[in-house]
Image 1 (cartoon, rainbow, N blue to C red):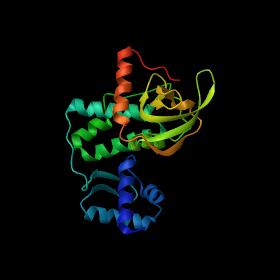
Image 2 (image 1 turned 30 degrees about the horizontal axis):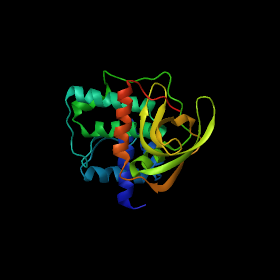
Image 3 (image 1 turned 60 degrees about the vertical axis):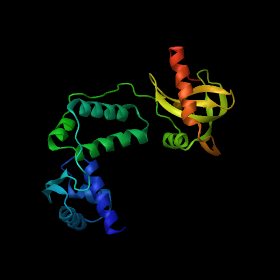
Image 4 (image 1 turned 135 degrees about the horizontal axis):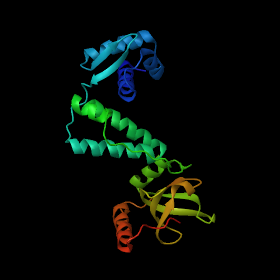
Amino acid sequence: MSRTARLFQLMQALRSQAPPILAENLAQETGVSLRTIYRDIDSLRGLGAVIDGEAGFGYTLQEDAHLPPLGFEADELEALVLGLKEVAQIGDPALADAARAALVKIRARVPAGQARRIEHAVLDARRFKRPVAPVIDVAALRRAAWDENLVRFDYADAEGRASIRSVKPLGIVFMTDAHVLLAWCELRQDFRAFRLDRMKTLDVLAESFRPNRVPLLREHLALIRGSYKSPNPS
């Protein structure tokens, strides 16, 4: 690993862990020796990062020189924190991890007073009953929607009836207790909603439906709004 890549990895570790972070933890996270961690901390300080602490007491990243400061109104900050904490509670594993990482990065970029508001926010999100975790790779499904590639999956409906569906993935929404894929179903030749936790497999196909995702999604959402109720997942 190059020195630049190693320093970048160390910065990511400093951003992502709760301070103060012991050098031993940083060494384990980055796969280098303690001596290298001490040298790299000094290098980061020389590059402008404000890192409090010392060997034996742990380190705290106070200011990241590579990220310009952000400013939010108080209510904007509360909304942002609440939204990210909600995603961390209800998102699929990859998205939940991304929400937690984003919150750490934002805390590193806002002024010190706002960083304290994030650390001790008035609002919080808790789910005592979390949605059933999908067995498919939801990140791959999201990429297929963005790339406008058809997907195929084995599916079981609410009555347990099995089918193989090829669909145009349009968007994913969180309903009362499940993540649902809004899609154009090739089998039914109509809009359908599929619970992600009922998908048994997922294959991303080479066939593209670009550039039709956005207009199809708009049409699907318009139909949902026109019916004054959410779609019933298949």
